[in-house]
Image (cartoon, rainbow, N blue to C red; front, side):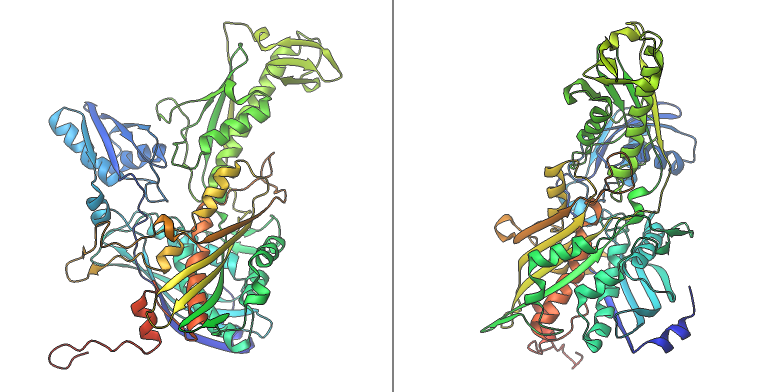
Length: 597
């Protein structure tokens, strides 16, 4: 896009380098992937799945099996996913084939060791590129190659690359791009979806490169990220190759609030300068940002059925995957119909009875799925009024309903209960959502670390997340999602969650919960969340989701904070004690026999 050479001529500084986000930590949901399959007829199978998007399992398996097998999926509660169990078609295929061969139902569930050793992982990322930047923080050009290690196959890497290239335009407003993604197959676990979907992999390599330019120009990274994040009226190409104009809110206010809570102005001392020094221990700070237009990705459908007893039922093929979204949709229906939540039920995620549902991915649950649910409830409400209006001798637009009672707005005493629809009928509303890529969410994360320059240990001291959600639908659920910035899909992928791979065999050497190092509860840092509620032009509740992006700003912020603490640049993740000591020149390289280093 644009003119790269012209962009570099306009730059005050040009920097280049190679950075990697090549560690492949397992997102480690508590429940391993599994499925139960029952082959019932020559071309029909039923699957009980524990996945994030059970309806997509139906569609995926239908295509995997040559579009000749009718697949029914029934979703159970999913014990965590972090994106990795959006689909588990590999496990499901094995269960299906075994059921067909035996004529019996087959249950296949990975052990934790199998889960760590053979299931899909995040694509690894390495970038060689150069950037041009002006003194005011304007990025004039980005050029280079982005290599993506997909393992021995992937169904999703191409999509992750496309989304990542879109998300980086949201973070960096630049007119001149020549960034070529190259997907490479290697001898390691296959790649799949992990929370952060493409943009996290790309930004974790690009932000360190941008930091080199910011250092030369003495630019505050917080001010740079705030300046460059997409503003209303700005545009970007998304994964479909179409140019979109952003029509959401300006996140600058939320960013300022987060910086204030964190104390950025006082803690930031400049590039490669620690905030404080106490003997061998040094404190450093960093900041990262992420946004995702996939809050409006793909299609959703929903039905809402009204019953004469003043109750309603939501038909939606959304599985519970630990976020409480099913309860949130009940809330939305309750608000539209003005019914208590206990009068609304929701169907199990069974593809036989529910309409199409892409699933809660990319933070799309609040906007995309929510829009379909809201429209279904509104459609049912309108049909109810059209049915009852002649009974009350008025027009549908003159009616309202509360607690299963319909009344005339200007004459509330003239009312009738839902029973008037007749005991021998129901009313069903339909809602549909078409993809909309003109809105994005945003998360900025501030990080403070302490580095022991004697041992190389990095301790996470403080985390502050800041965002704007339009309207909070579920306060505890939102807090849980923001706290999800920690863990192996997020901040901890930059600290110690490291998968050790034998490149000669492709085997993972630490596929157990002893050798795989991860954070325990006593090691949790202080964490603060700033959440603003500026109404979004999304749906009637003016909200957008932020769950999927919480992990993404953290790793690059850690990278920045540790580099500032120790006074020298790090180019790799995770920042283990070995890498820190190596950067400080305190680690003597091991020498093999024969003198080869």
